[in-house]
Length: 277
Ligand SMILES: Nc1ncnc2c1ncn2[C@@H]1O[C@H](COP(=O)(O)OP(=O)(O)OP(=O)(O)O)[C@@H](O)[C@H]1O
Image 1 (spheres, rainbow, N blue to C red):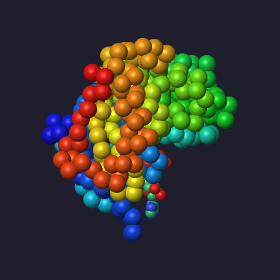
Image 2 (image 1 turned 180 degrees about the vertical axis):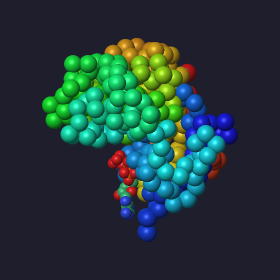
Image 3 (image 1 turned 60 degrees about the vertical axis):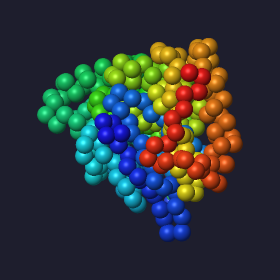
Image 4 (image 1 turned 45 degrees about the horizontal axis):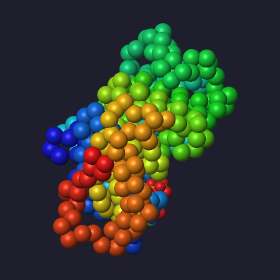
């Protein structure tokens, strides 16, 4: 845990009369992709907002690269479920604007070239001059992805980025993010409800018990070989055991474990399992 790029140390979120989650400990290593999975209301978005520096925990802290998080930083880019694009700017201007925040002295022409290149990497060259209202949901999310990768954040945070998209678009974007992440050796943290998405992208999958008073029940190590593609994921050895394990957790164990954790369960070292390995 001490060597992790991100170290989440005993964070909790409490409201008067309600504890959402308590005593969460986990790390994210450099270049690692970690997914957080759990039922609605267990506090996943809150955890991501705390990692982004947009919210403070009621207890505990998050250390990034040796320093406690004090607030938002361009080192940690967020891709939201909605696209969060500036509606009055073109796709290119949206990306260039983020780049200009990151690189304050970068000349205009260079910003434009870098934005174009980022859009090209997600197949949006033809849409560079269009405004968000002229783009489909999938294209808007692609602009969001291009923008996040363009600023080369030390960590990428994603809150169910594909959940509002149709299945085909979602699959295409998942493969694209898998490719971009591996090309950039990008450290990433993502919330998802989609078990296959977690299996496709994650090195480790964190399973949270149901809220209130949710806990980190278990850490699932994804040993499926890379590169992984959505279309052929189910053919990889170990896939079915891994999928069964996560589904069984979501259907049964997340509720049972919310009623009582095993006596030897340690919040600082949630059990690590390798289904299908
Ligand atoms: N001011 C508040 N007082 C009490 N409870 C609150 C308050 N604000 C948020 N909550 C609760 O905090 C919980 C955690 O919300 P959060 O959005 O982090 O969960 P989530 O796991 O991401 O859910 P989803 O998967 O539905 O997005 C929710 O159950 C919400 O009702």
